[in-house]
Image (cartoon, rainbow, N blue to C red; front, top):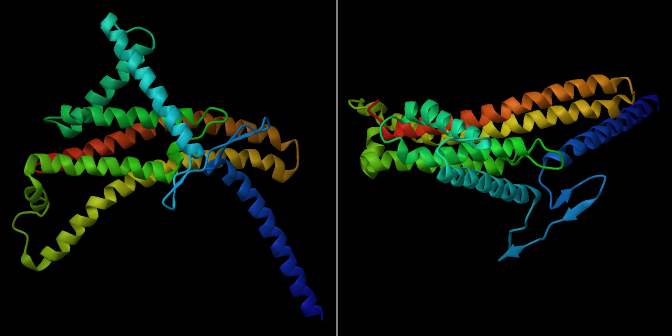
Length: 282
């Protein structure tokens, strides 16, 4: 009977612990996962329409809404900067900041990594740089969402870079010439099948790395901030609040730097992969 009682006690304790852990995890997941409503607690929520076509769920979610918001905001800002140049070639205000970023991406990222004919890919690389940067920064605002912390978004961005990389190689070498040039000349026939498999895997590991790197870095900061704030309620002590808030603010300020760094790294690696494909002789 004593042994059975001990087993029941241990089982009960485990259930309580798992339940508490689940509630804590649910609280964090509630803030970082996609939802079918816009959350404006404590003021309420706004439900989003549910759409389905031929059995495919095409519902508008929270991340889709903020993706549209970022896209519209990006178009308005860059269109305003372009319009300002028609009035004066001397940039002023925010136009000066936009010009500085464009020149930085062109001279420090695209031109050194791609080299010849870099202008063909500059528009795409500028687009993903500004889109990722705006998405990262916009996600730090209250009641917003960091769309780059959604792996579906980062996978789509990585997929676009993958397509541009292959197009860059095919444009310069032709379809068969591009894939033929990936195999080093003079390779022994015995290990040729292994090299082909390695090269094919290499084509897909590059966009996979882009996808996971951006996703993991952006979601990690939000999880840390929410975990630090959650310590106040987990510990159940007001004395924990100052420490948690100070550390959360520190991570929040660090996220501002991470937002810029991740936009830079994604653009840099995309440009590097395009340059490697477009100029295989180097």
